[in-house]
Amino acid sequence: MSDPNEDWLDQELKNLKDLQAPATIVPSVMVRVRQKAKQRWQIRLFHSFLVGLAVACLLGLLLVDPSHLFSEVPVASHGLKLLSLISEAVWTSLFQAKIFHLPVGILIFSIVALSYAVLVGAASTVQRLAVTRK
Image 1 (tube, one colour):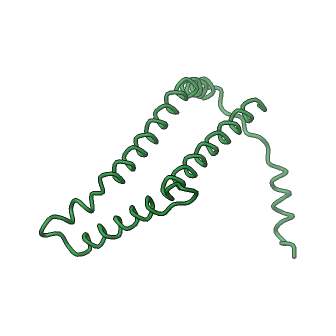
Image 2 (image 1 turned 90 degrees about the vertical axis):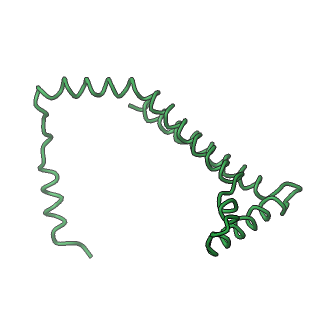
Image 3 (image 1 turned 180 degrees about the horizontal axis):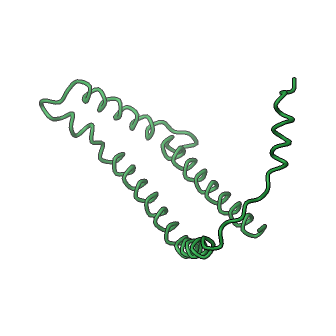
C-alpha cells in the first residue's frame, strides 16, 4: 500500500538544492577541524585511562566487598545484611564452581575481556577503513 504523500515528498526532496556556507564561516570551521584533529590522540588516551580506572575500581569493589564490611556494623539494616549474604554467595559460586578446571568467574572475565578487545579492534579497523576510503 503506497502513501499518497510519498510521491510529493520524493519530488520535493529531488528539487532541494545544496546550500553554500557563507565565506566568513569556512576559515573558523577549518581552524576548529584542525584543532580537533590534533586532540584526537589525547582524547583517546584519556578515554583509555578512564576505562582502565573503571575496571580497577570494579576489581577493587570485588575484592573489598563494601556490603560485607558495612553489614558488620551493629546498626546495619537487614537489607544490607541480605545484600552481603547474596554478594558472598555470588562470589563463592563464581570462584568455587569450575569448568575445565578453571573457576567460572575467571572464564567469564576472560570472555568479557576478549570480547572487549575484539570490539575495540573492529571499531579501529572500521575507522581506519573509513579514513582510507575518503
